[in-house]
Length: 74
Image (cartoon, rainbow, N blue to C red; front, side, top):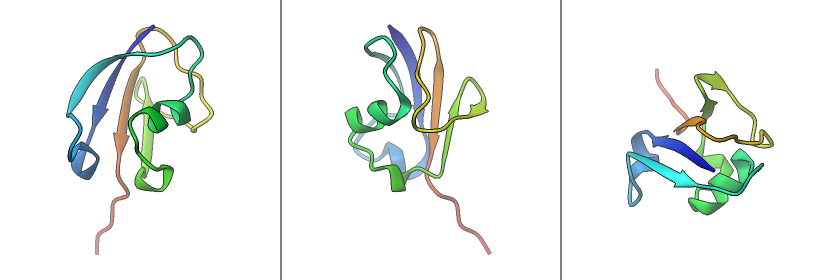
């Protein structure tokens, strides 16, 4: 199955900004992070199809995944 993946800010370094990835049926967001060699603590916000998603969420054909690093401000 294919999903669209967008990485933001520091998560792009050494990776990509946007890519279409082929995954196994039922692969989870956590498994996608592992494939991308992104540690869970590097991700502040995970979204699938514009909605917040937990790491155990199974992905489906055509999903759009957006990953953001933690954001700090002051």
